[in-house]
Length: 427
Image 1 (tube, rainbow, N blue to C red):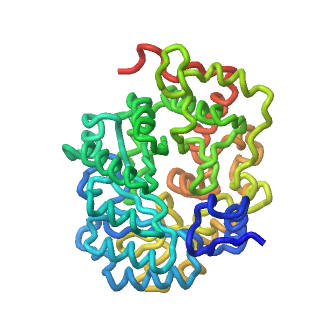
Image 2: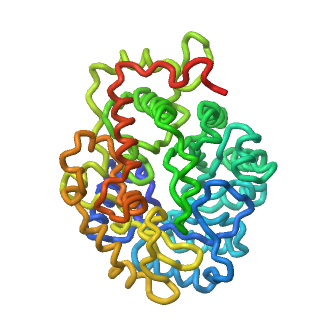
Image 3: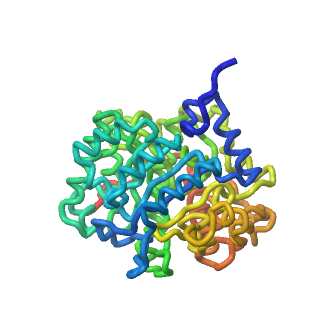
């Protein structure tokens, strides 16, 4: 019998027998087993991004080092496999290295979310030597320093981030670039594709701007309009076609969920432009369309399979939760309703008895308002968190989800996408 790696050592499905990670996620969902947790080390940050969802609470103490150590022990006892370390900017926490090394010693599969500005030579060498560190995800908000620095409001941040990313990736560590598309950086979308391709790194794009966790909706006003959203979706659709995938959903490799507004694009699947002889992203989409007409649709993703079986709609509250720098536990960052504080109650008790957590576990597709008869459900991200933020009810229809589903359906049904950006439309 083929040896199976210890589950506490890695959750990268490439290291498991085919289908094993899918089965682990399915069983975790069916048993409400806490599989993955995001922990903020601090709300402090050396950038002042115009869209940041994380609000500061002046005077409120963050989790101390001993509390973080106790939390890691509890996560280990609960059987958590994957730990995401975030912020703020987590590297600003003086105990950052100790936390990562403690998590590695506890055999978590560790990921780090960072702005990349602190990835100097010494830190990169240390991160590469950390055996349990699966990847480092770095936020980049533009293909030029002018755009990125304007969004972060920190001069020189683009240069430091790109240098850190190149340094870490050059040493062999997996790095994921995260690009959140908004009005100020919209026209650099293709430039970001080119930059990611030059760096030979995967690029995760997302188009959903949400309110801050204190209710401030200022970031929502940065969302791109419908026509620009449609153009972005054509870029994503081109990625699908280059892989020969003709299904309606975009599988997010990190969560297994279908998210029309989010996708991870990898450099090895870039479409070449035979006319120009360059590597402009997905400019040969019309030719690609003709090559996949007779291919079978891609298999359903994990989320659609679980939902079709009458299972929960999302991993939030089912096998995943987040804990902020103050110890408040949430189903996910997009559901800013605290279920309890780990300084006051054991996480096991919060996970078992959290009111919203239990409502999310019981929520089924048949209970969603107006969704059962919707003709474009197959294209929808079905996010209870967005519904809660927008309508105050996890069973309601999220306007964001509905609009994105409609746009995504239109793009999927186009006979040919052509170039996503019309010549002369870029500024």
